[in-house]
Length: 270
Image (cartoon, rainbow, N blue to C red; front, side, top):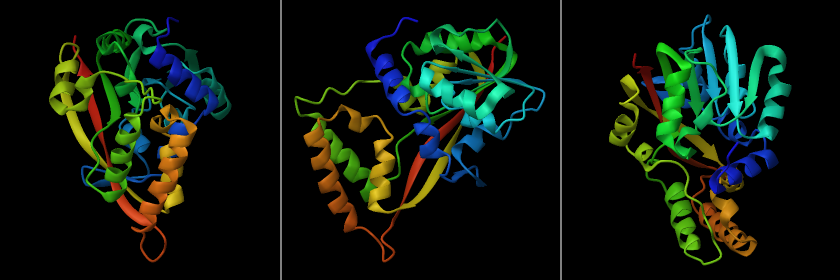
């Protein structure tokens, strides 16, 4: 595989922390279209047919695949650490491939559905990725993915982002930019998908949390942002942010706040 700098960071991060994404999201209840789901993964799994051949793109440790009862399960990931965890979780229930979304190790028109949870927005060469997904899907096969979007205003999220931006201005921080900016807005999502897909549907997912300050920090440690900070910066961030969070806690020592995602589904053009 040809690997660029941002991809190498992601590979190294996930090799060191396999399962970190599923651990962060699998216990967060989700609301979409007025319906409640155990997690955002369930928002992807709910419509998958039992007779389908399904690819989970950037499958991580296989948590999403473990929720499916489809006929044929396939996972692709760049991280060998994540794939090892997926193999341990799934055994012979799925076929796993070490590979990239820009050059899928799959035959033409071999999948009924392609799923992707919180990874498509990290991928470079998005047009190549979408072209490969289209190639792998059967005519009128479906792509469904979940990506992050702007969270509702809250002291928890706003305080984190404000402090992070301030620290990123420090010369020792070398944050990488991931993915394609078009996925940051709904009109951009539609524009990117339209050459390959139709019947594009975008739904908002709301995640509800009630965490202690320590739990909030632990969740953010599972994200990539903090990995770019020098140890002194990270410690300063931790100390000041948790002090700020402590002032926001209810009587039980926890803070309630919301987060948001988008679930996008579309059908492959002929």
